Length: 138
Length: 158
Image (spheres, each protein chain N blue to C red):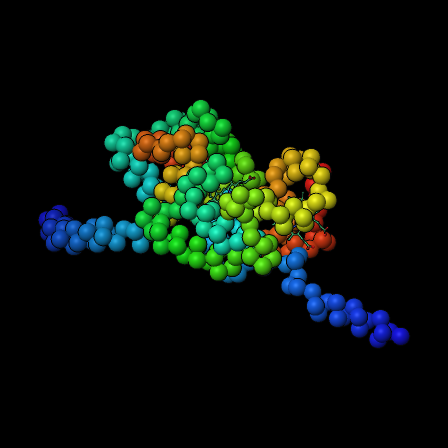
């Protein structure tokens, strides 16, 4: 027992150092879809709801398009751009391992696609909800 | 006999300008990533440099879409893409791509060159559900992604 305690105390500075270097090198590290869910939940200050995310994704909010207009209401399948018809690979990480692994890409497309569908940026809560729903799809 | 027939034909071929049905895309990963996500990465040869500069400078309001580049490295990436498009722009093939008032055209599909090449396509054809718009090159030019616009690779969807 006390052996573990000692080990923990001894490890603490190492862990803190490791955490610091991860924070500093943050951008260069490959991320996992779950990291984005955690980040958006933290920014929103509340837990995500996959159910709310599904509703948000599949309904129009005053504009011409919903998220589903290009990504379909089953985002484990490939979609098509509603205006140009270009095929778009599946959005759910279960069906497409490249999704939600690159912060630059994720941030860029949330910015563009939210502007196109809502005429504004998405809130952290909306991003958390959508990410939770996409992660729940098998 | 044979030689006399082929020689003039050969001369004609040799004096023709660069083939119009091949528009190979010069390798550029940034261009393909940023300008090939929502549609075909259009051949830079089909607008002049002035038109491309206007396209690149208006990406946040791009034909009804937000196509703005990343906030962080926005300027460097945008400058690199503008440079690529400018270097490969096609003033010679298409002439100046401006409207009657001298304003740069932003659409390949509105240039005089495009209209000339497509004069046989009936206006109603562009609106077919499987085509949607003249901007959808790949709907008819089935090998457009490889820069092949030759007649034998054209299939017009019904």
